[in-house]
Length: 414
Image 1: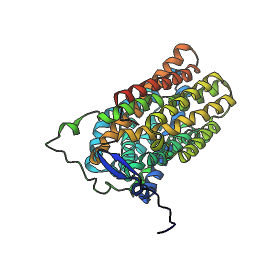
Image 2: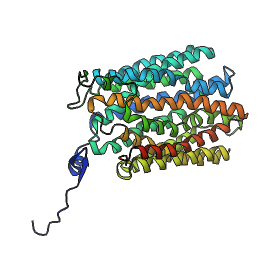
Image 3: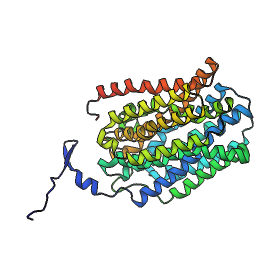
Image 4: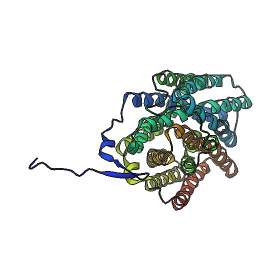
């Protein structure tokens, strides 16, 4: 038509094929199933993270534990979670995502409620190990279904929206735990965490098993070994970078309340609330950044924010210092996961995504399993809880050369 401005169509190359990006962007992202997934994830993250400061305070007060015991209690659940991951991934590809999400949440709620019977340090560790073995099913199922529901070239955007629920819950969960414990004690904290998990399970019952043509993976005689590997190759490097970047969480969620008690700095709840609000705002404002800026630059920015934020919290041990550090940490908390999740599933067949996500999220668990005890050991050996923050800063900084090495070995990574 005369006078009508015609915009050239945009195409991108994906695995030797031209993909119409305009058509991809026109596909809906915020579908009813995607919104149900986000709501379920929000309650699961609330339940999981609400008990982190509860565990730390419970060990330090009722069980008379020190920094090392706190770190072990925070991280021990990760070892059983890691061991269960390969089987969880195969179950998700064969039986569907819903059984992981709804079933995993129901069992986790029951295990979390059983924490109220842990009246000794040994029984608490048993309860944490049991929780690790079952809680990972929900996480694998949700992140896999996110990639199933998203159009190919909007996975970074989908991961950003989805992770608003996950990290928003993880940011506000500790505040919820602090508030509940101050009113109903440690048993109340464990039971409210279990209630949040149960709500997540009920909501997840409205999710699909598979999406579109992504049917169950029944195995293939031509490629049997690929489906039996313990670690899915494409997810290993992004998983390592993720683990280094999020080892800040044992310090933020576990050691910060303890440090604030030692220095009489007041309630940690408002600091968690600030962090959560900033993560939510940045995730929404920068939802398309991983797709446009690329994995390497986005992850580097996130790692830098995490390292600086931890350094500020350790250097300026005051209430303003904690608020400032939490604000800087929000940069890392909002950007790292979406960028790396996209890279972990790049080129992975739809009926093997649960296995790829199983490997990727395994490193999420390893960050807690290794980070908690390591930071606890650092604090114990140095004689001060502040050292845990400097240790977390160094670990996040170490993620930068690992990121560059990954980029050098995989030039195709953006």
